Image (cartoon, rainbow, N blue to C red; front, side, top):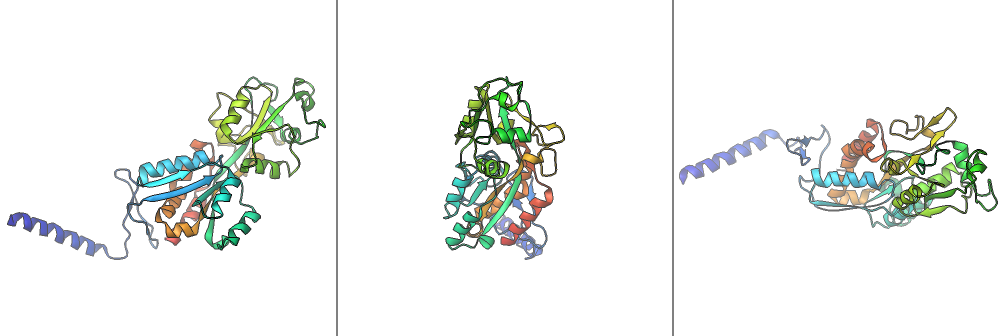
Length: 342
């Protein structure tokens, strides 16, 4: 018995000595959850989150961003903080902001930048957008126009042809446009226009940026769910729809992506061509998530998840979800700002 007590005292004394040697200025590594791996804070930074976190992180917004953010959340809950429950919704960019503004969510995904009217609404709640909200660009997406695999006539189109065919009254007063209206040697069959509805940032990007706020054809079939658009186009040889590249990349067996000529020859959307200074720049857009910094300050799990998003999540998982990742220094800049919060 005395030998056991002596052994215990020896272990305790050694532990106390080790702690004393470490000193107060060092930061304990935060375990990622994978055996043998850890992330150590850089000199001058601190990690306020405890080694084990719990609680909820609530995210809603863009259906385009959803696959990427859901994958990041899954990785985080599996490998980093299994006791944190990250809930990711896909109501659409505009619908997501309607929840974010009154503080119902911690982060709001968006496939277009926040609007001034939404910023004004945030400020009206008592928050200061400039101080209390952080815009985080996640990746680049390529607006992709898809057709049925048997449609071999419209596999290559110019940017102007795509834009003009979606404009109300451009070809027909009743907007019942035929493929032969675009090019005379194409079939005299009515085009079935499709796309996401007004809840989605993809719709707003197409309408506001690409169509420059000109009216879209009245015959367009707008849908809430991207999976519905995939099914509709895959069953209609005269259909054409638009959405983010990721939804095409996950359905290449059902759809064909239109190759677009922006003036230098036809180019298709790919991870290698999507970017602001790359061949598919004409239909490239950044996608975002917006972080409520008040929530990040009050809830350690929210801040920790946000750090994970910019530290590894977006960079590692963007390509696998149909997005072109940003330069590493962009993510590093976001992480520095988040580290300064705590």
